[in-house]
Length: 492
Image (cartoon, rainbow, N blue to C red; front, side, top):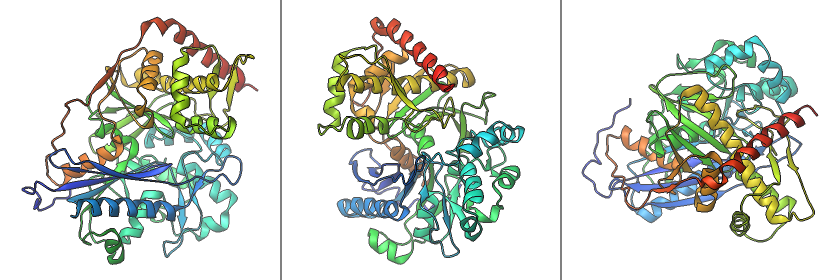
């Protein structure tokens, strides 16, 4: 672990910044060492879909959002942070030239263009071997499969590229002039051996690259110093401000939720959704349903992610129903309905865990004349719950029983939606803090690396949602139908 001099130890005004580079926005929060004085800044950006199955973003816009968030917090605090730490969405890919300039847009996790490459590899013995060594399921989300597509479909760009990296690595390169990737993000690329903590040669060969065309892997607690002077001035901080490289958003959500103990799972629904649990060693699922990613050398995070969380609800209300009312209004109206028979498959963007089916599509089943906008909204919300429940079921089969579930993400702002999730899961859910769990995890990691104790007050923060058992039979039956419908429609 990188060490620091600890010169902030006696400064009661010292604080940390956690910058969470997400799919729909970058959220930066700050937290003082006394556990108080939280503040935040969020800047949204868009995803482009130039062709069916494509999901791309502009890396320059995201870079600016990161810089703006840090600058805003520093302006409000009127003092430089003790350290900054990054959380980031996984699975993105960007090709850059020898000067670090992008040759492609940022291809994000939701992009399905490499579906055919992923399907062929997943069905092979080599694909199973790569999964067992890297912990990353073979799917179009994976940078491994994106590289295979790029090599086959855009060979000129593939050959010209000096380095392939994700969004966090691009930001670090722009801030410090060196391409580095943390072990956590690397472990989600399908190219990294999660036991040996090095690039996995058979995966590199499958992608058609060598290790020197990837950023240098470093542990999540690695400290970077030496901001480019112009960048430091833009953010209003000294050039030698320590930056802890951090980890992926999923792994840091686990740390931010203080969910490292065995059997303590986290459930997150933002743009996408996920269920995760910490385990002490690398593991794999013989059905290849779950991922296993690194947080630190002795903490692995296993679980699964769904492509279709809040993004599905946004599509329904904005594009399909074309409503101008606030999303929260429709959510509350849908929750007031109570359980319904209208069934939805949520696979608008295909699906990752546990089915890993890029061809899966969204559908409504059982539509009647009485069904209106609010019924469709309710069906979509229930379908998101069913999808993440299926991940939790696979997780319990593989990693052991779940004793506690902590929830976070955008849906955590709606107590009624958390209650719906508890009813469908048939398990008690705990909301410990509405603060962005990934950004908070980044702050906790930074404090550990800098040798400082954070006081985290729990008073008044924990809310418990107990399932209403009068709905248990209904939701068990709906969940059974959910799977029957998917399996039936998969054939056509």
